[in-house]
Image (tube, rainbow, N blue to C red; front, side, top):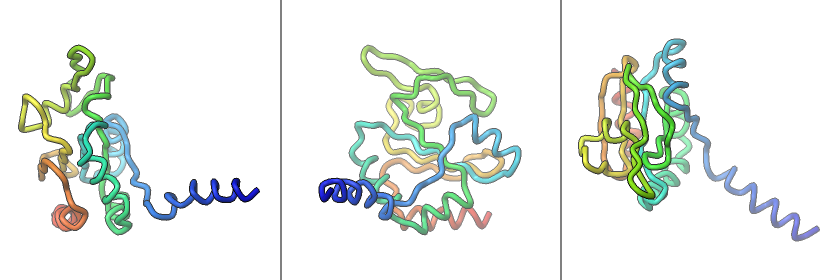
Length: 155
């Protein structure tokens, strides 16, 4: 019984420490934009990127930031090297480009300023009309993100 109690405690602790960000897919966001236009944040990352993992943990710990994201923005978490389905975005279709045992999605390359190899993590922020308003390569600290999102919300 004691072992079960410890196990349940350890399983529930992350739920109290980390807030949940609402995320969607590119097709979800397209539908949501028609119903309730909001700025969109596209977070491009890979599963091997240690900076991406650290950043994600830090962002989820900031409850004010998570609340701001959930209320005022649509968020798409896009794994650039594992997402293999075709994606339609802004009237164009993008596919996965295999390269031996790995590959990259065309959309990650299209959104990145570095067309040969995107820098991860990559943050693309679009206004409610889907125009680029901010581009950020590398780690985005929670305080910096909150400041930038407040500026964008005020537009």
